[in-house]
Length: 125
Image 1 (cartoon, rainbow, N blue to C red):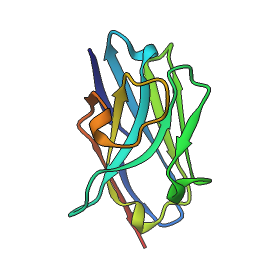
Image 2 (cartoon, rainbow, N blue to C red; image 1 turned 30 degrees about the vertical axis):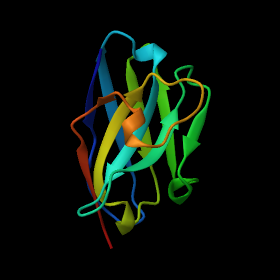
Image 3 (cartoon, one colour; image 1 turned 60 degrees about the horizontal axis):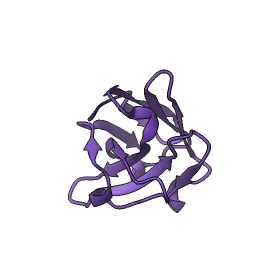
């Protein structure tokens, strides 16, 4: 069982940066792949980025490549999402999630077993 708590959201102007954190508690954090998702008003929750349990591999949706960086530290039970060059289209509630699937990166919500409560990111133009 893994419990997840996000923090670091806020309001920024376009072009600015934010760093989201996801603190994990419970057993098994170092054995799960982690992902970040986001959900804008009236839209479905969508995949943003993922990182392997080993910290070695990452995967991004095309719209954030080169702007966002996912990282984790298993010793600290924490995963981060560094977001640079933010755009108004990045405005959403951001969620971290954990999946026990290791063989490949998964990008759909139904493949993730544990979720945080979300943190709001608002980017103004």
